[in-house]
Amino acid sequence: MAILGNFIKTAIELTDKLLPEPNAVEAQQQVLRKLLTTAKDTAFGQQYKFNGILKSVNLPLSYAQHVPFHDYQKIYDEWWYQLLEGEQDITWPGRPNYFALSSGTTGSTSKRIPVTDEMLAAIRNTGIQQVTSLANFDLPPEFFEKEIMMLGSSTDLQNQGNYLEGEISGISASNIPFWFKGYYKPGDEIAQIDDWDTRVQKIAERAETWDIGALSGIPSWIELMLKKVIDYHGLKNIHEIWPNLMVYTPGGVAFEPYRKSFEKLLAHPLIYLDTYLASEGFLAFQNRPDTNAMSLVVDNGIYFEFVPFEEKNLTEEGNVREDAEVLTLAEVEEGVDYVLIITTVAGAWRYMIGDTIMFTDKGRHEIRITGRTKHFLNVVGSQLSVHKMNDAIQKLEEHFDVTIPEFTVAAVRRNADQEYIHRWYLGSDETIDERKATQLLDEVLSNMNKNYSVARSKALKGVEVKVVPTDIFYNWSERSKKKGGQVKTSRVMSEEKFAEWEEFAQENYTLTKVP
Image: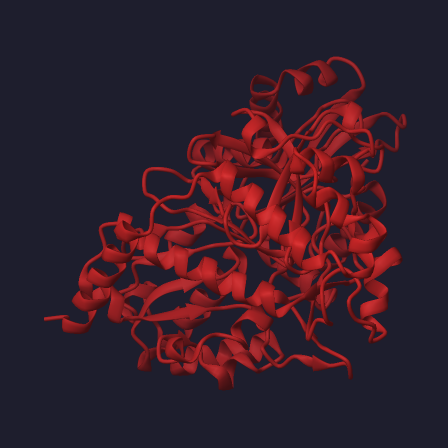
């Protein structure tokens, strides 16, 4: 009998019942007031007169009127660079001990995002909220005695004198509470290994000594780790060595494109709990079954604003215009794409994180990530979101009975006539007829998206599909020294970046030269 498991499960269920669901709108106003109050004496708070904003009758409106939007480059160039030089009280009281390295999926240069003690505490608190939400799932008591495999970036952080730097998953794992150490795998020793392949090899060697009940990490890298364990031990599936594996929490990307290939590694499906943990904070997580949407964390150090994803609100570079329409949580609508703007306990003020989201249930403040502001394929008016692309790829998987865990696409000029076409690269280890895939993909997207259909009748003159092994995508990441951790494949590339990708793909795999 799982005595400890029963105790933990009962405690979680009791905590879940005793902690009332906050009024989201009121909670957001309280978060904003606390953020402004805490930072009013910083250099940023003084410049934008936080003391005056705090006296206003309509706090969200006054905040929006007096503080400008920031993308990473703007807030870094004007404020955060001073933190790297050792200054303090710039955008948040004190000086951060950590900086999260993030190149995201839109550039090659690493961003350095401040990680304050308050942010680490908020991440831990949201993690606890996610654990208590397990009371909503039908998990046996035995599950709560099992270990959790958290596959992120290395916890061997780089000392830069005034601060330590690394990816957010490595920073978070290096700060896990002592009471969690007994559950955490692969453990401190292996987690500190910087080389991803060496780390995964050690995981494979130790795998049979662990009783893993849950996995956490980016789908592509979790899948490669599972394959390594399976191959190393000569197994048919991962449940032969981890029979009690029941839960997987992917993060950072939509899981659906990976589901089919992922489930080939299992003896039975898992419970999937989506999470939205970015370098800037822990924003949302799935807290109930029967949905793949995530609930925004409205009461824990992050204030949210929403800009309708419309041409009038954005510059050609994909940044939010200063005069853009902006909405609070009380004003949003379901089924509309919004650019997500956050203000956080790490000193990010009206910060454009780069993601677009859609509310699926306003009452529960549940969202789905629909793409990146710079990852909408809209060079010729096709207005394709990553969300729609993922749906289309799933249709291809179903039709051809294959797995396509990776893809990327760009609008490029055809050499023959300089007309724009969409060129897709699909990552799959199975045989796919490229001509038939092209025809079906074009048909599915036309049926899904009216703007795409119109574009195909006008400026978008063609579609091409190339199929390459999935390893090409992983090797591309490794070439950029980004293997493992928080790295995600760029679903949409600029024409210039795509040219680099094509050259790399053609060097590493025999392809018919594109016309």
